[in-house]
Length: 199
Image 1 (spheres, rainbow, N blue to C red):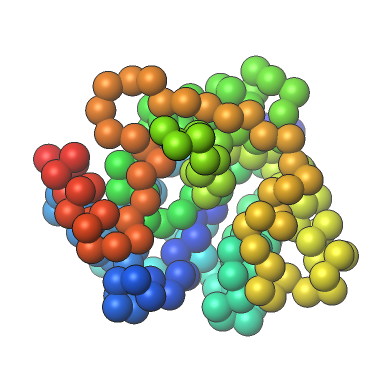
Image 2: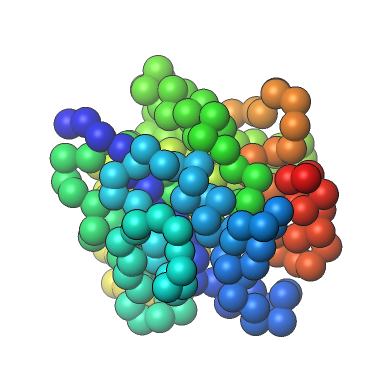
């Protein structure tokens, strides 16, 4: 088993930003979605779960969770359905990580490859795991989805916490200079902060 894929979750409601199409919002002249996809430029396939603008500058596969708005676990399952079974590692990422870089993704990949863990995620400065900024062993992620489905009878409305609670996770601290790659944009203030960092 070899290979590396990426699943980018881009279907959130962005309630704290007035319902905006958050992944399409620009940071330093590029949409947040484009910036996330650039950070996983060597992934094959790159799957976007959510709306994909027609002018997206990179080729992707796209899908939607069923039902639409079913939450992060349903979206993860939809993305995994487009990833071949022989892929070993999957980056599972939110689409609102405009400061993510290829280097930051590589750190997570190397962590997973070098440790007997199911995945690796960044831990922020407050000690929180940034679960939608991680790289996972594909079989473990698929098993986690099936575990949630078996426990609840449905993936609709399942939380990210339910998906990850049974997985063994390596926590990674970002110790390099520059902005944190896990910084996500949930508010207009976050977007302005990301713009300042990116410039």
